[in-house]
Image 1 (cartoon, rainbow, N blue to C red):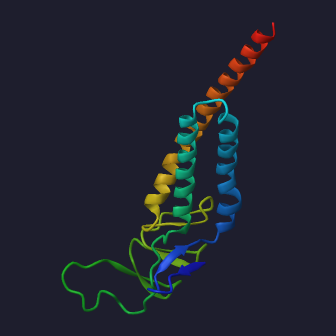
Image 2 (cartoon, one colour; image 1 turned 60 degrees about the vertical axis):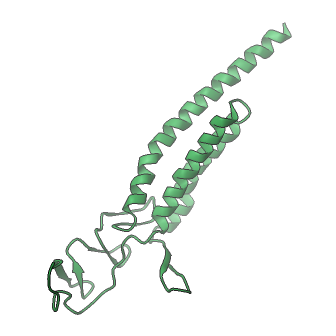
Image 3 (tube, rainbow, N blue to C red; image 1 turned 90 degrees about the vertical axis):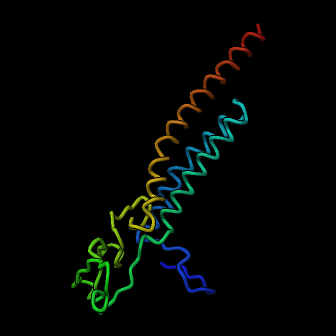
Length: 176
């Protein structure tokens, strides 16, 4: 699905063939534990820790959605040889029979998406789209921030459980 800006006819967002996986599986798999952790730890720990964790969670979700909705490097199909009439530095082009189009050598036809993508890396079902030149930096930021978020979530839960146990011990001590 392509979203176009009516004013300048440019791509605003692009979602791939697996957008349902990203929307109904990946996003809830990240959000549910994060929201649960926030609600559990909020009354038990310092508000700054809860705020930092919430911001880290928001960052990871934002990187997921940036990856999923950013143009991966879609190329316009052309049946004219782009090397003809060019002088100076030449880019290497190859003919692709599946698309009946010229493409840069680093571009690939993505069968899952049915498009040509510049510097195609792979199709990621978790983000729902092809990963290429246009969205690879967002993909790296998403994958690079996901493990630290998981570790941070576990640390926050350990701290919150510890604080909860201290509160229970204090309650037992005041009852005696």
